[in-house]
Amino acid sequence: MINHDTRINPDWTVAQLLDLYDGHTYETKHDHPDRFICDFCAAGVAYSSTPRVAQYVTDRVLNPDHPVWQSKMREYPGKRPLTPLATYCEDCAARRLYFPCEGFNEARVFFTLKEDRTMSNPEVTDVSSADDGIPWNPRELSEKITGVPWEANAILAGDELWGPESILVKH
Image 1 (tube, rainbow, N blue to C red):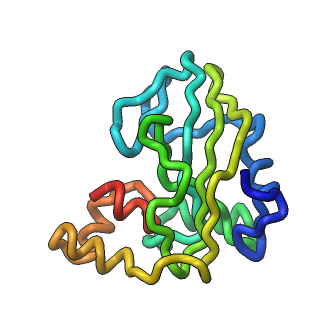
Image 2 (cartoon, one colour):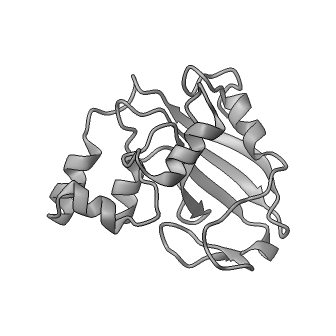
Image 3 (tube, rainbow, N blue to C red):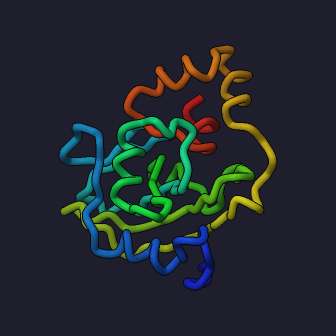
């Protein structure tokens, strides 16, 4: 387990991130009242099974004009919000960040999801500060993978916020 005093960015520590999870309600954008949807396999897991779930969290997105991101920025004035951009079932989740991206502060969080959507037993399993990541450009990689210019890919993303890991998982 990562030390609770570890800084994710200048505004947030691991302990503060854990507080955002422990005992709070899991919010979903999906219309599935009885299950959460894994962003990798899209199979979904029933809440009644109290699954162990993982999320990719970052304080920066690739589409910063997105209304959800702008709302998060207003919610945490003067701070960079820590925002989950992908959720995985235990079978698809990795304890480490896939390819942490230089310039982004990222974290991997696991938690148990109870039937009533309450999150418990959170654990941060990996953190990468903006200075520690691998130097790669998510927008350029997106264009190389899809052959579609970034602006068109951002439109295809629709209502989803994207961070570096989203480029690897969604393509």
